[in-house]
Length: 181
Image 1 (cartoon, rainbow, N blue to C red):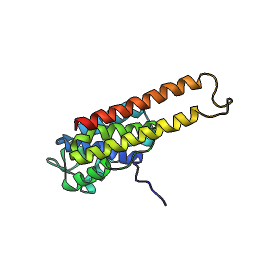
Image 2 (image 1 turned 30 degrees about the vertical axis):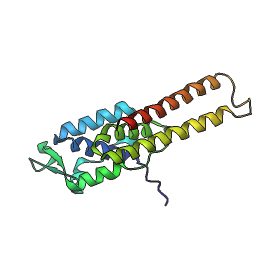
Image 3 (image 1 turned 90 degrees about the vertical axis):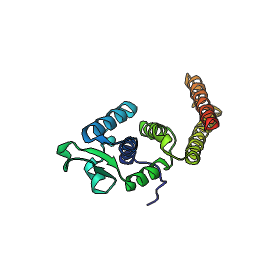
Image 4 (image 1 turned 45 degrees about the horizontal axis):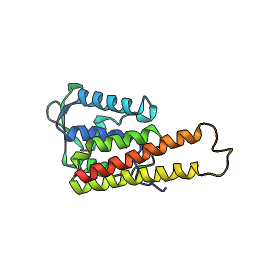
Protein backbone atom coordinates (compact mmCIF):
# COMPACT_ATOMS: atom_id res chain seq x y z
CA UNK A 1 0.00 0.00 0.00
CA UNK A 2 1.27 3.48 -0.89
CA UNK A 3 2.15 5.80 1.98
CA UNK A 4 3.16 9.44 1.52
CA UNK A 5 5.17 9.65 4.77
CA UNK A 6 2.66 12.07 6.31
CA UNK A 7 1.87 11.55 9.96
CA UNK A 8 -1.23 9.66 11.03
CA UNK A 9 -2.99 10.58 14.31
CA UNK A 10 -1.09 8.13 16.53
CA UNK A 11 2.21 9.31 15.06
CA UNK A 12 1.30 12.93 15.74
CA UNK A 13 0.74 12.05 19.40
CA UNK A 14 3.95 10.02 19.45
CA UNK A 15 5.70 13.17 18.16
CA UNK A 16 4.17 15.13 21.03
CA UNK A 17 5.25 12.62 23.68
CA UNK A 18 8.79 12.29 22.37
CA UNK A 19 9.11 16.03 21.78
CA UNK A 20 8.09 16.97 25.30
CA UNK A 21 10.53 14.38 26.68
CA UNK A 22 13.32 15.70 24.44
CA UNK A 23 13.10 18.94 26.40
CA UNK A 24 13.78 17.08 29.64
CA UNK A 25 12.59 14.18 31.80
CA UNK A 26 8.96 14.26 32.90
CA UNK A 27 6.75 12.22 35.21
CA UNK A 28 4.54 9.73 33.42
CA UNK A 29 1.28 11.36 34.57
CA UNK A 30 2.50 14.88 33.78
CA UNK A 31 3.60 13.88 30.28
CA UNK A 32 0.29 12.13 29.55
CA UNK A 33 -1.68 15.15 30.78
CA UNK A 34 0.46 17.62 28.79
CA UNK A 35 0.04 15.67 25.54
CA UNK A 36 -3.71 15.26 26.11
CA UNK A 37 -4.18 18.99 26.80
CA UNK A 38 -2.09 20.09 23.82
CA UNK A 39 -3.82 17.74 21.35
CA UNK A 40 -7.35 18.49 22.56
CA UNK A 41 -6.78 22.25 22.49
CA UNK A 42 -5.29 22.13 19.00
CA UNK A 43 -7.65 19.65 17.38
CA UNK A 44 -10.57 19.32 19.77
CA UNK A 45 -11.70 16.03 21.26
CA UNK A 46 -11.42 13.20 18.76
CA UNK A 47 -11.39 9.42 18.83
CA UNK A 48 -8.70 9.63 16.13
CA UNK A 49 -6.42 11.21 18.71
CA UNK A 50 -6.17 8.40 21.20
CA UNK A 51 -2.57 8.44 22.32
CA UNK A 52 -0.41 5.38 21.96
CA UNK A 53 0.51 4.05 25.34
CA UNK A 54 3.60 5.39 27.04
CA UNK A 55 4.08 1.77 28.04
CA UNK A 56 4.38 0.95 24.32
CA UNK A 57 7.05 3.63 23.90
CA UNK A 58 8.89 2.06 26.82
CA UNK A 59 8.53 -1.43 25.31
CA UNK A 60 9.90 -0.11 22.00
CA UNK A 61 12.89 1.36 23.83
CA UNK A 62 12.02 4.98 22.97
CA UNK A 63 11.61 6.09 26.58
CA UNK A 64 13.06 4.75 29.81
CA UNK A 65 12.17 5.32 33.45
CA UNK A 66 14.69 7.10 35.62
CA UNK A 67 12.98 5.85 38.77
CA UNK A 68 10.26 3.31 39.41
CA UNK A 69 9.56 0.09 37.57
CA UNK A 70 5.96 0.18 36.44
CA UNK A 71 3.84 3.01 35.15
CA UNK A 72 1.74 2.73 38.34
CA UNK A 73 4.82 4.15 40.14
CA UNK A 74 4.44 7.35 38.06
CA UNK A 75 8.12 7.23 37.14
CA UNK A 76 10.15 10.07 35.71
CA UNK A 77 10.68 9.19 32.04
CA UNK A 78 13.56 10.17 29.79
CA UNK A 79 14.07 9.97 26.05
CA UNK A 80 16.48 7.27 24.88
CA UNK A 81 18.81 7.50 21.86
CA UNK A 82 16.31 5.38 19.91
CA UNK A 83 13.57 7.79 21.03
CA UNK A 84 15.59 10.74 19.76
CA UNK A 85 16.04 9.01 16.40
CA UNK A 86 12.29 8.32 16.24
CA UNK A 87 11.57 11.98 17.12
CA UNK A 88 13.88 13.16 14.34
CA UNK A 89 12.04 10.93 11.86
CA UNK A 90 8.65 12.24 12.98
CA UNK A 91 9.80 15.85 12.82
CA UNK A 92 11.02 15.26 9.26
CA UNK A 93 7.77 13.68 8.03
CA UNK A 94 5.76 15.28 5.24
CA UNK A 95 2.79 17.55 5.90
CA UNK A 96 -0.52 17.28 4.12
CA UNK A 97 -2.56 20.31 3.03
CA UNK A 98 -4.21 22.00 5.99
CA UNK A 99 -7.75 20.84 5.46
CA UNK A 100 -8.50 19.34 8.84
CA UNK A 101 -7.69 19.63 12.51
CA UNK A 102 -5.26 16.69 12.45
CA UNK A 103 -3.07 18.43 9.90
CA UNK A 104 -3.17 21.62 11.96
CA UNK A 105 -2.11 19.56 14.98
CA UNK A 106 0.83 18.12 13.01
CA UNK A 107 1.95 21.61 11.94
CA UNK A 108 1.57 22.91 15.50
CA UNK A 109 3.64 20.01 16.87
CA UNK A 110 6.35 20.49 14.26
CA UNK A 111 6.54 24.19 15.07
CA UNK A 112 6.49 23.48 18.80
CA UNK A 113 9.51 21.17 18.54
CA UNK A 114 11.31 22.70 15.54
CA UNK A 115 14.02 24.05 17.85
CA UNK A 116 15.07 20.45 18.56
CA UNK A 117 16.29 20.05 14.98
CA UNK A 118 19.53 21.20 13.38
CA UNK A 119 19.28 24.61 11.66
CA UNK A 120 19.41 23.08 8.16
CA UNK A 121 16.60 20.67 9.04
CA UNK A 122 14.57 23.54 10.49
CA UNK A 123 14.93 25.40 7.19
CA UNK A 124 13.80 22.32 5.24
CA UNK A 125 10.70 22.00 7.41
CA UNK A 126 9.88 25.70 7.05
CA UNK A 127 10.31 25.46 3.26
CA UNK A 128 8.00 22.44 3.26
CA UNK A 129 5.45 24.42 5.26
CA UNK A 130 5.80 27.41 2.92
CA UNK A 131 5.20 25.11 -0.08
CA UNK A 132 2.13 23.72 1.66
CA UNK A 133 0.73 27.25 2.05
CA UNK A 134 1.66 28.16 -1.56
CA UNK A 135 -0.23 25.11 -2.82
CA UNK A 136 -3.20 25.98 -0.64
CA UNK A 137 -3.21 29.54 -1.99
CA UNK A 138 -2.95 28.28 -5.60
CA UNK A 139 -5.89 25.92 -5.02
CA UNK A 140 -8.02 28.71 -3.58
CA UNK A 141 -7.10 31.19 -6.35
CA UNK A 142 -7.98 28.54 -8.93
CA UNK A 143 -11.30 27.90 -7.23
CA UNK A 144 -12.11 31.61 -7.13
CA UNK A 145 -11.22 32.00 -10.84
CA UNK A 146 -13.69 29.24 -11.73
CA UNK A 147 -15.94 30.40 -14.55
CA UNK A 148 -19.03 28.62 -13.31
CA UNK A 149 -21.04 31.27 -11.48
CA UNK A 150 -23.20 28.58 -9.91
CA UNK A 151 -20.15 27.36 -8.00
CA UNK A 152 -18.62 30.73 -7.08
CA UNK A 153 -21.57 32.77 -5.90
CA UNK A 154 -23.04 34.30 -2.77
CA UNK A 155 -20.56 34.99 0.00
CA UNK A 156 -18.08 32.37 -1.24
CA UNK A 157 -15.86 34.88 -3.15
CA UNK A 158 -15.47 37.04 -0.02
CA UNK A 159 -14.65 33.98 2.08
CA UNK A 160 -12.12 32.83 -0.53
CA UNK A 161 -10.49 36.27 -0.43
CA UNK A 162 -10.12 35.89 3.34
CA UNK A 163 -8.64 32.38 2.98
CA UNK A 164 -6.23 33.55 0.24
CA UNK A 165 -5.09 36.47 2.40
CA UNK A 166 -4.52 34.08 5.30
CA UNK A 167 -2.43 31.75 3.09
CA UNK A 168 -0.40 34.74 1.88
CA UNK A 169 0.19 35.87 5.46
CA UNK A 170 1.36 32.37 6.38
CA UNK A 171 3.76 32.32 3.41
CA UNK A 172 5.20 35.67 4.52
CA UNK A 173 5.51 34.39 8.09
CA UNK A 174 7.44 31.30 6.91
CA UNK A 175 9.77 33.51 4.90
CA UNK A 176 10.31 35.81 7.88
CA UNK A 177 11.16 32.89 10.19
CA UNK A 178 13.53 31.40 7.58
CA UNK A 179 15.33 34.75 7.27
CA UNK A 180 15.79 34.87 11.07
CA UNK A 181 17.33 31.39 11.20
